[in-house]
Image (cartoon, rainbow, N blue to C red; front, side, top):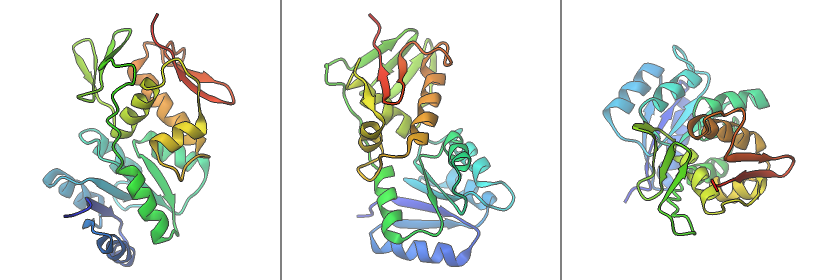
Length: 230
């Protein structure tokens, strides 16, 4: 049985060949796209469990492809790039990527990132409530759906995993490291820019005033806290 179907989007044939070999050896089914056009055609035609997406693509950039994918898909996306500044990471994550890895990288590191990205929490809150109401937003943890009134609010899998973890620890300050290791995996802990981006995205989706949040609060220098309605 396949460990998952992964799409590699990169215009370098040698790079795709090396990654395909490493992934296939670990039981993954692998497809390739060498251009943004081919990538979008493949995504429309088949279902993938994860995409490895190079930022420096011809035609559309990897950032633009990521935004297009996010319009209709919640599959995990790992961005690949030779750039390693914080602004580059933030741009990739803000476009909808779940993770970011800098070239060159080893097969072990890539496989660890893939395993972390494919994790699925589907957590039911420990306090026994299958749904949570935050103002006009209703969160159903069993179906992993979020609604604001009659409108469905689309969360990526990683966004929902983060929100679910907050819900299992209501009204408690969670440190940056705890959140990163719980949602991204045990190899994470220092990537605070990940949390800043994902918290901002969640606030835009569940808070009436994202710049003045009522529920998803920042605890300066420590972490974040989900404050439940009284």
